[in-house]
Length: 400
Image (tube, rainbow, N blue to C red; front, side, top):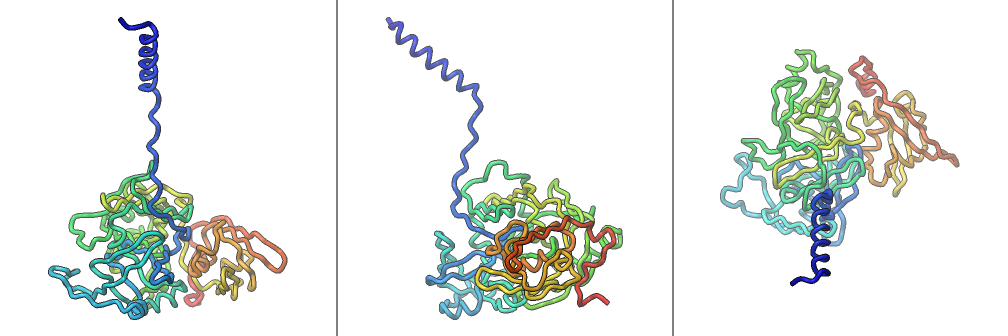
């Protein structure tokens, strides 16, 4: 026969179990990142440092590139050996030369490229974009990971599981995609959805679209031609037509008044992605979008000619300022030492991004500068978009 004390203990335990069954479940704990890196904010190039033979070299992160590429100077410096093509190892019918022997580190991660890397000349990109770049990290490294790009916090994270509430899920592989880069279906201003490559190395304007699509949009009054702009690629510098498109839709999200470049290939770039906290679940072929701090800000035309800057160590000063441009109207002067832009530490920003932000006429901006012994904060509220008739965005070289 059970003792009264034993009966009481069992009853009390059953009571606790019953209470626990009605208590709210604790949220799942997010595992710590596999790795985390500081990056630039607001659509700046994503640059990561690879350590090779105890020296650091800046590389762009490029989801639009199937194979990692190194600068020709690094290939020669580290004497990377040419690999013989394996059976069936082709890309669109041809196979570029691959090189083996590169085993860099990214933070605490060791990178291995069993299929080799490609090689290219990045001199033009370094000079034309005013950024340090000795190659691009492609999908051959990224494919096994969940990759979160938090443009608001300026963080890139490699994760082992999805974070809580990552946002709307978008499928990023479509039937017929053989080039191993993420693509998504995007509709521009009511036109039938088309495949767009998602490229984290494409900065400047938000979207690239093929000429046929842009012609249809212009004929329907859903896009207006702005001006020719200068673009820089590994193959060199070229000019392209820029259009303001009424809207673009990805999943259930519609984004208004985007600037789009005419290009042979459709693509979504960093200026579009920077509106969100983006989480790529590459193993499951999904991308998650959660609206960020800059989601509703209008696209501003790209103009890198309004200021010339000089960087000495971690300090950036203005060498030249167009007194009649956005930077001059903001109150910036030649010789100003820039402390921060929109609260962001300039040590994370490329020279390209500093010139880009200071040359934008439409977006709100806050710049802290040191002028002599004074520290000044210069601010501008957002202006109406160029679609409302202001054509002052044209580069100086194109104005009459």
